[in-house]
Each structure stands twice: as C-alpha cells, then as structure tokens.
Length: 263
Image (cartoon, rainbow, N blue to C red; front, side, top):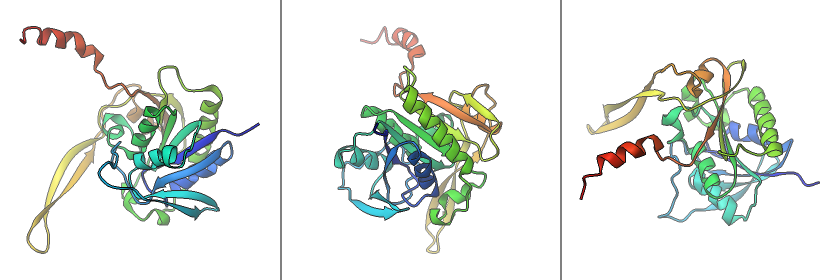
C-alpha cells in the first residue's frame, strides 16, 4: 500500500528549524517533498511573483532532496504543483516560528497564504505555527535557533495522520493549527480572534540625516471566548477551520437597502 504524498512548504525559509521539524514529523506517516522559499518571507501573505521570473534549485539538506525557491511561499507552492508536477494528497505549511492567530495574522501570514493557495488549487492544506515567547528569534538566522520542537512534532504527526485518514471537514479544506510554547493543556476548536497588535509606525533618522520607518505593533489581548488567541494564552492547541470565502453574508441584506435608491 502506497503512503500518502505531502508537499511541505513554509514562509521562514528552507533553513528554518521549524520546516525540518515538520519534515521529521511528517516523514513518519507520508512521503514528503520540501519546496520552500530560499529566504525569510514572513508577512508576505498570499502574494505571487507575476512580474519577475522565479528560480528553483534542487538542494541536499537533512539527508534528503529539497527544492529552494527564490520567491514567496505561494510561489514555492505553485512551482511544486506545476513546475515539479507534484500531485500531493495534502499540503502542509510550517512549522512557522511564531503563532498565526486572529484576523490580523492570517491575512498577512505567508505560512497561511501558501496553505490558502493550495486550497485554491484544489489541494487540502494544514498550516502549523508555534508560539514564540521571544519574537526576536523569528528574525534571527534560522540556523542558530535552539528551540525544542519535540511537542510540536507530536502535534504535527497526530493531526496530519488524523486528517489524512478521515479527510477534512465538509465546509473547510484548510485547517490553521497553532501550538503553545509551554506544555500543552489540551486541544480546542476555535474561531479567529479579533486582533493581536496595536499598530504603530516609528520614524528614525539614518546617518545621512534622512528619515526611515519601522512598522511595529504592541501586543494586545481582547478576551473572546472560543477564539484562537484565548486558546493559545491558556496553552491549548488552537485548531481553526478556515474558509476561502470572504463574503460578509450578514451585511448583504443591509447593503441591498443602502443602495436601493442608487440610479
């Protein structure tokens, strides 16, 4: 009996410890092909490189053949599907270094963006992210991280095996899973929380006297029952089914009334 086939990607880049922790976990249950960005691509969302060519290089890493893509996570996903002709049963994106929770994060996350594009191309997907207590580590050289992925790998193996065996929920082909940094207290099916940060822009002056800017954010917490943000704060694994349909259905009837008099 043949094993399931998984295309594995991420947004932290092909050198990320989280990517290769996911590879180790998934290799126990499936044949895994790694197709990932060559460099850090966090917060690029679902953007696609349509104005420039994309290079893909075959590399040997962690005793396996992988593919390094000089582009975004979605580029890597598309090159895997159509450049390499892969026909995976499932796409896995992650393990991302840093949680991807709330409306705010999933619309900017390259990890979730790649998973969304997989679903758009007809392949079910799971995005895995790991909470980080020190956010500065996310932007350090990924080869220098000293993180323990033992707990995360167990989650990846357990949930991926389950969805490969039982399929995805009827109304969602994309599952967003976030893993707490501390000891797991349980599992919770969640909805997206409202926000994670109070956004700010900091102006600084370079050595030549010219201004430059840092977009930053101060963490905030909006207590919402059943949200992914609340689950992570309680050290629960957050499991959120996502939909590709962004329609605000509850606004449709009101909008019809609002535009009724427009000629």
